[in-house]
Image 1 (cartoon, rainbow, N blue to C red):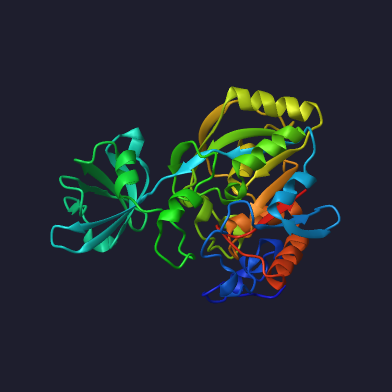
Image 2: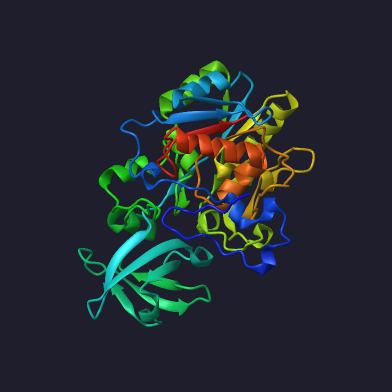
Length: 370
């Protein structure tokens, strides 16, 4: 297997220690050449009009189409499992008392406190406990640096004069577009970087496979006899944290909060008992299902935090299909997809995607693996 470059990056340097790592566990095995022009900077003009690649994981056959074709690949008795998390406009831009610019990237409330939040800050070195951050145009609103955390750039910040912090984000925050989208967030991102079924706010990134669905598509699938069920996983740093370990088995995911209701667990167990297929919409739904599922493939209600990292060799218990986008080279998301479909099939599919001009990443095209 050849080492391939990430967009805008450098080739990994495996070093002597990686010589005895099996190919499937080498980080460089998950890199590939991706032309920059294939990284989607905007969503398609209309939601639901992206391209769709359908991949049969038993024979490796690839079919090209468009997202509305998904209805032709699903059958009555199938169940789509979607993540109902809602993205927070979690980037806050402010100024120190000295006038210097500051960015706060809010991740989650600290121990469920209303006014204390865990945040990534810039410039981190200059933001120490006791420093105050004001927000232009929001008179009386400020945040104080309360605590420096061990992780680079991480702080506990305490808000004053903002009222409910979620509401303050809605008023003053920016959509946290990923760094490979090389532009500032715009008004359209408030709608398009959010699924039409988003409900529970708490994510700092979208469950992007769900971005393709319109309400009309979901209705059409229900009319065909496809059930729609929802789980919750708040997307945090864990999903998108880069993999740096040359042996991917050494990578550790950050924990992310998940929930499954009793009604959903009952519906999924019923579908499984009736022989219906369960199709996870996105890696976050897949990781939630695999976290909750028992060895017999059955579910029960629950909530907690998961650091489930899925890579080739993993034995799936929960899902029979996966809808996903095209992911970053060398990412844990790509490893999950390779684990589900098979490494060789996925690398073939990604080569086909590049050669055929599919759009990559959050606002890009979709892949259905059955």
